[in-house]
Length: 174
Image 1 (cartoon, helix red, strand yellow):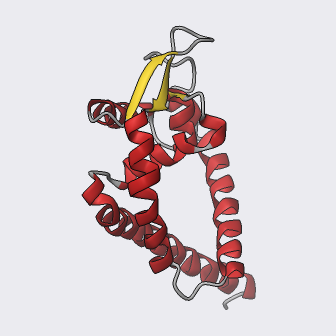
Image 2 (image 1 turned 30 degrees about the vertical axis):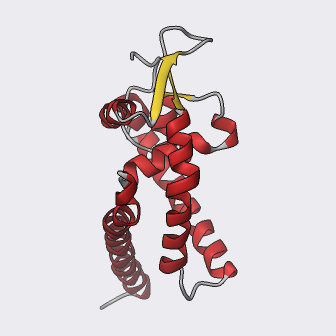
Image 3 (image 1 turned 45 degrees about the vertical axis):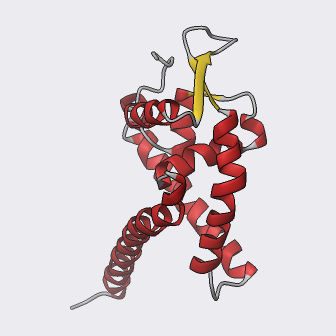
């Protein structure tokens, strides 16, 4: 005999599987098509994310590598290589944190800011227009609401799994 709650749970897991597979596909397509949108500027979606994070008013004085990694939900190790390439290309600059000299602060360079504002943002906005075609403001608002709710739940899972410790959430060694 099949119980209704078992059918409900099976249907929920089938939907969950479809949802997470679609998220995986969206992430891959964002990387592929987003990078194409800004490749003439020599950017990737990862660099786009770093410049976007550093362009926020609250990051005007820069961000520590650890704070930037936490904000972007990536490991410090992955971010360090990316920052190194962006620094080499003159898009960001790093220096000692005035509060904690052991930490490095990453800031957008003047060249990086110019690239971001004058070249990348117009193309990114055009990309957003293309991929959000057919979405109303309400559709976008609801999508954002549910993605934030999902992200909060994933963060709780990560914290329970020791994600913060595994990523080295202590003092920034760099």
